[in-house]
Length: 174
Image (cartoon, rainbow, N blue to C red):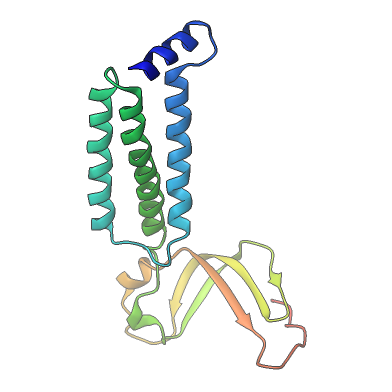
């Protein structure tokens, strides 16, 4: 109660605005959640993210009901809920981005790819890599499933490495 009176007094003099403080804190908590996802060794499943997201929404609804009663309780619930929202947002975005991958049964098959180089090649002592925008896939083997080819990624990261102990310059891409 005393903290709320103090905050109201400061707000009336234009020194402190509780709503601006809550919003800035929520933004920082959201960014912290995104950062914490980057520190994870592996992504959760989408079901785990959905469960955490539901918990964060429940926490934010509780914050709305406590908004008028206690600034401290509001912040105590809002900040972790916003951090979980940031964590889930980044995780679901990463899961969506990783959906486009080569099916496991196609990993050892040969496929000719027609397209354009989408970025400047990056060269290092270990080899070279670049982004490739795919225009068309042409199966080398006959009887390839055309439906699978239509779902292949439209952008590839192509890399090759020098053999062990070979520090010679990698040939230019033609």
